[in-house]
Image (cartoon, rainbow, N blue to C red; front, side, top):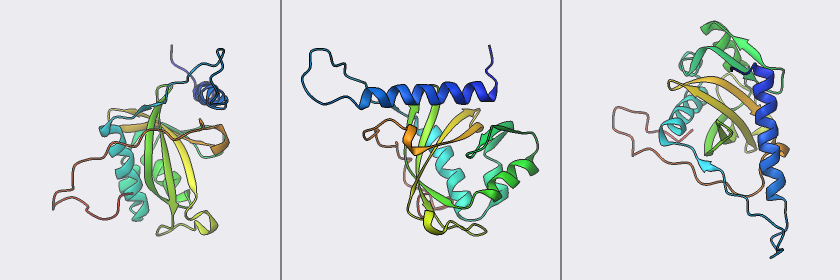
Length: 181
């Protein structure tokens, strides 16, 4: 059974809320308290795709950023889910993002990779007071591309520090060795 975009977003939000509820328990030795396992770290390959997309966006390379999306793709940046079916639509979505971002960490949750970003300025954007803040996005990757890109409100995230994002090996001379994005 394939979920419709709104159903998938509701399912993800519910899973993240449930994980957050478990993390809100007191740290005492209550016999009735259950330990909640930390979210699993995302794989290196998924983290690298997200990092490379953010790097393209941060440099103002909208065509490069658009290339990280599958077609069709479902996106939501505080809006109802939108289905993008052309590369031009994906490019316009990326262009509309006001901030660049530096990937801080990723975790796997409910079939998605949840990325934590530190927001930055970027060419063509206007991040303003958002610069330095945190943003959270849930990604569903398909064949190394984003099939879903869903912005998460910070109050719906599990409390506690998720595991660190796996790092890729040091860049080779022919790859971008600029700041990690």
